Image (cartoon, rainbow, N blue to C red; front, side):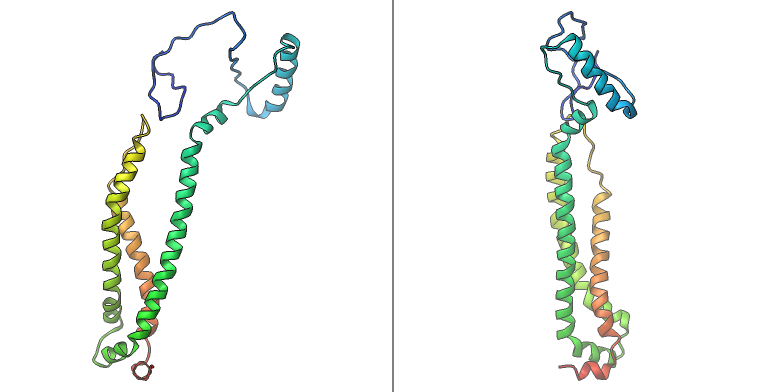
Length: 203
């Protein structure tokens, strides 16, 4: 047969020939059963094996666990990457909030002057957020080629693999810009709504 895939997707399917041999040693017996009857089946198999092969210890495994073992390293990698992604997002968000708080605190009088001269809240939000959004866009421009290179290199380990879709990168850019806008807007909005007199008297 040519379409029997016995290993993981890292390996290609190769032609096979299956025969029925009389030698029981070194052979596998495949049992198909309902999962609800696993315990009773194992007891029955142990009894039957002991009756016919008392000198040979019974060794068995479940096929789904064997398939899981073939992808265990990929599963660990996915968990580690997910954990580090969450940590990076949290640390970056906290850092951006802290940096924005510092910038807004130092430019409080500037906000008061701009409001006195007629600037609206949206104008102040735009002035404060544009430089941070620009930095986020630059970070994405730097990161996207690296992700594309290392992701494609990792996928080459699989004989049967997917491709990295182009829409993932614009989506990542939009999400990171929105997160930056939320962080910047939260800090800036409080100062922009402040009474200009209070802002001008701020030390």
